[in-house]
Length: 117
Image (cartoon, rainbow, N blue to C red; front, side, top):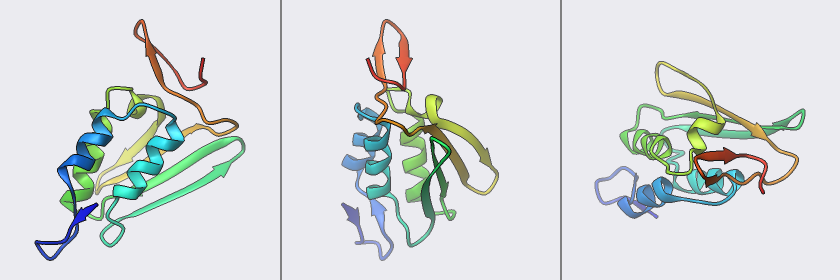
C-alpha cells in the first residue's frame, strides 16, 4: 500500500486516485484515508463526541500525507466540503460529521447529503 523504495514511506499513486474517486459512506472514506496515511511522519486521531465524529490530522510536513490531503480535497463526492471543519498553518486539519449512523454522501442533481437517502 505504501512505497518504501526511497527509504521513506509514500502512498502509491493508485491509492491517491482511489481517494479522489471514492464514493460511499463518510466513515468508509476516512477508513480508507487512515489506511493510506503515513503515521510515521504525521498523525490521525479519531473520536466521537456528542453524536459527532471528529478527526484530527497532521501531515507532519511529509509530502506523501500532503498528497493524501490534496486527494481528499479533489474527491468527487464532496467529502471535504461536507466534513472539513478547519485547517491551520503547518499541516493541521480538523473534520467533523454526524456519527449516529454511517452517513453516505450521494450526489444527485447537485445536492449532497451526509444523512443517506
